[in-house]
Image (cartoon, rainbow, N blue to C red; front, side, top):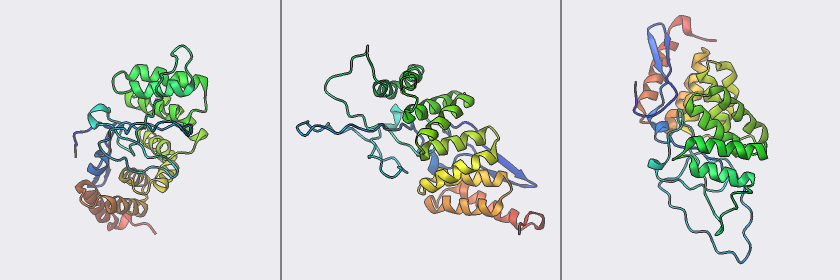
Length: 261
């Protein structure tokens, strides 16, 4: 099944004459966009004027506990992300005075990277690198740089930055994206714990359930695959591709040689 959205690749798994298609499901594709972690915000002075509202077009799904609500810009302004995932956008609350470009802080470089992503992704990558050079524990910069590298096909570089983001700050976005990347690279068993963690932290994210089902299926764990597909259907009951995969999986599980104790 082919769908008109960007993704790194689709996966069709063949078991005898039954084929399960793990292309991105419709519900997960609807959430495709640019994921941006938001840095901690400094408390505003008591007399400060409230920041103007940021124009939004929809609300992102699957935020982690304790995170501020994030504003989502128009979809046309955001480039697609590899194979979906939870979509979070930076809520940019700027001061009235722009920082001096000759003496930028890591936060300034990060903010600049967020501003440049849509129009100049190469310059955005450079800005994130400057933020990381100044502060290697800037998890948001590592995650965003990893995503941009993932989109360009630099899987090795993306993996390095996803892992560093997780070392600094365990985060469901980094776990989900690293799990998907490892699936892309054929390291299925290695991807499983990251996808399990992403599903645990993002229980309302269709893509987390769906990619975990693919991971289980590619290891021959059919009962676990069934449970994950059911979880995805609970969130997107009308998705035909997930329905077809679950139907075909159950047919496969009825074959004597495929039954597991």
